[in-house]
Image (cartoon, rainbow, N blue to C red; front, top):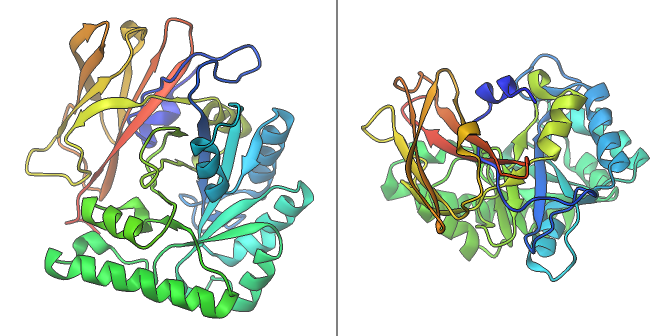
Length: 350
């Protein structure tokens, strides 16, 4: 399997339990592969667009390979439930562009597939965004509506003295606007740009949402923090059927511990990430570390029956970009791949 496409995505590690010949995990952990889309058939924005042909290929792949396809909130309920583990996927869409209504919704209807659409209320009806009447029609077609704040602001750029008050007020405002126009109350949330800190995550919990979606690539898994759920981002460069199938087959590696936990890039650049993996059956000769815009070094700090501790570090300072992913992949001794990614955010860059 070729992993060059990971270089532009993240630094990822895979590892939950091995799978049976049916493709289902054989231990008691349940997993969900969640995908994030923005635009469909709009080649003006290749980094956030997928072709209509590729999107249809994604849907057909999931159906042909016996995936259970749920909304985001249904997937969270599934992870918490006592249901038997099975292959499960979620389609999420951020922002509410018209191309979803024109190019994606007809395909979801044709294949009878649900999805979750996160909307930022300030832009509804403007530019390339759907109008409220169009969103009403979307809701009638098996689409869950989630909250994406009002303004879709870079909240981490606000001073701490006003950041959390503004963030809380925006959530409350967008909830009230959605209630007024769609007569529903979203129970799931998506962080704008996938950016947040510990306090912001706490505000989302206190607001009554059942879960929140981030944007670092990876696999959702039972027992993990459902207020920072990973999602595989879809774009023109990495949306072929083969690449989609590779992501859909990934497993999640739950960490026992990691340091630092924060996504914010500090004074030390390049940053070092230390992760402790709660399993000892990983093939350390095949550990692969990726970082956007450069190379990554992996150092094995400790091994034993209680797990493995690794240190990850880019070989040069992170490039002049706002968001950079470290991605680590590794196989277990049964030959199955596992994935983990950590996002670094530099608020000084817009």
